[in-house]
Amino acid sequence: MNRSRGSIVVSVKDVAVAAGVSVGTVSNVLNHPDKVSPATVQRVQQVIAELGFVRNDAARQLRAGRSRSIGLVVLDVGNPFFAEVARGAEQRAAEENLVVLLGGADQSPERESAYLDLFREQRVLGVLITPVSDDLAALRRLDAAGIPVILVDREMPEESFRSVSVDDVEGGYLAVSHLLERGRRRIAVVAGPASIPQVADRLEGARRAVAEHSDATLEVIEVAALTVLEGREVGERIRLAQDRPDAVFAVNDLLAVGVLQALAFAGSGVRVPEDVALIGYDDIDFAASTVVPLSSIRQPARMLGRTAVDLLLAEPEGAGERTIRYRPELVVRESTAGVSAN
Image 1: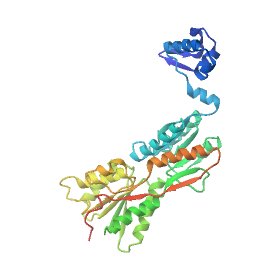
Image 2: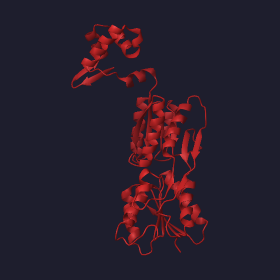
Image 3: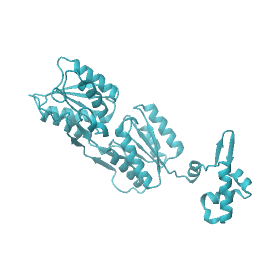
Image 4: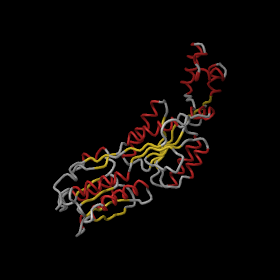
């Protein structure tokens, strides 16, 4: 246990020498103060404060073979949906005196791998992860090393990992069925990257809904990232198109906000929802406060994080469910609730 202050490294031995006690006594003051006289505790604590010593809990936990840390890797820390997942995980972990170490993969397998390597070195209690791809070899290695893995916002029944997820196929179906019920027939789905399983599932649900209406069409507009900027660029293309769709389903709310920014500004010549109805996915906090409040498919983001921690805590005993799947919910606001198309 030590701490570096500038070029000075303060160790337990330094504290012991300055306080005139043994290293064992300092250790007892730090870990079992009830075994040391009050006067000695006070003297050692005073020296600790004067020298600026801070105990290295990480090293102590590694020696004990158990960490108080949980690793969490999400696709994009800038996405408010994943921020809510992390908040839920942190709240539940704090109830158990645990901490969450958060890493954002930025949809990059290389960044994801780097975080997994770090968490393995830290010997975290377990890893909660929304995988970037279907290549789960690194997760299997973690599991084999005794570090349990919980899939978040993903379900893979063929794998041994516990998982908590939302039925994204149903979510895509709900979104497009709602547009069709509003009388819309030329549906565009803003989706991508195709390698993200959640995106593929939402698109599958959208296609199922359109297949139930012989007079409806579906166009897929692919994007490189699930961001507001990508959505804005798509919105510009839709605004300028001569044969524009009468409804848009964006596979997350950030894309939907970008589309809305391009369509709904003054002078665009396009009205939302009269000319183009728009629905997103995730129901992030500011979906309700956009210039035209945004309809969306709600996921219980914070509950996903809390449940993932519960699954991790149950893993050593093998207790409880292995797979938990929540159902999404349609939230209707003004971006689809206007006049139906003819």
